[in-house]
Length: 152
Image (cartoon, rainbow, N blue to C red; front, side, top):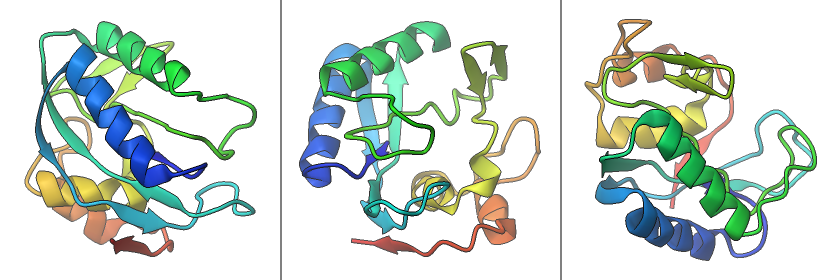
């Protein structure tokens, strides 16, 4: 999850609390990382954090709950890659592969995004991508994303 509008640190905390209430138990939280905006560069830096979640929800129900949390926190989808209060993505769901119009798991671009791989590598460096058959550690080493990701 991440964001770059308002008090991003507080929004990460609020999102985690909402996820705990609505989705399941947070087993682990990565450090918080700061990185320049990806995709649309003329905006503030992002704070990002990965969560390891235990949930009884299936992937579509989890997505619906996460989108509800984003909306209640004030997320406005004005422009692709634009600034946002909070963005919560499902990067992996165990070793599941989900290919629905509204949901792709694993996240189809994770291997290209250092800001997502770095916190993931802190939590689960040996997790194997179920499609690419490479660990998070390997994906991070091979990632061509030039953006610097800095632990706070």
